[in-house]
Image 1 (cartoon, helix red, strand yellow):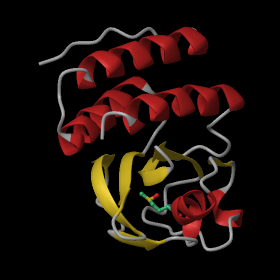
Image 2 (cartoon, helix red, strand yellow; image 1 turned 90 degrees about the vertical axis):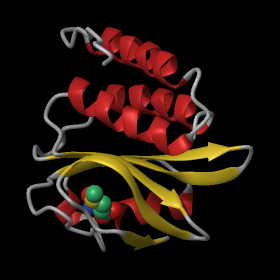
Image 3 (cartoon, rainbow, N blue to C red; image 1 turned 180 degrees about the vertical axis):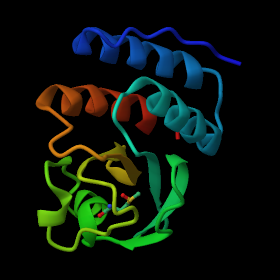
Image 4 (tube, rainbow, N blue to C red; image 1 turned 30 degrees about the vertical axis):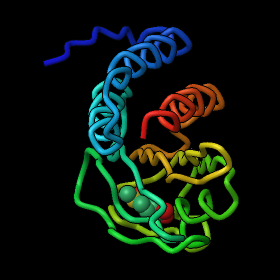
Length: 159
Ligand code: SME
């Protein structure tokens, strides 16, 4: 078992520690699914106020559910549909304060209020997305976005 002690008091420091822990966790493992599974667990354990943390993989132009923590979720999401599909189609981070106001939002869990989705791109190829959901509106700040983009950069090399 890995026991990471990450102090959540200072957000910038927490994201630095989280990135270091993630780097260490994936460093010697070539299997992408294993790395996504451990990354989802680490993020879930570290970031407060989430109700879902995990991955959708790009499987031939469609997003397919990958390793995650939280409640069972929608399995397939077309590019361009919902928040994850928007991130995949645009290759842009989606930081949504109120998912209910997002056109086409897919409510896998009615408890979700805000969402952060980071596209994972390696050598110009979209591998998938990292998706975080929260039951609190506007849970994700610019600092969370920057921290999770840094995690995405590590993950894009490890999946
Ligand atoms: N709400 C997402 C679907 C994925 S779940 O949140 C796990 C969306 O609209 O893309």
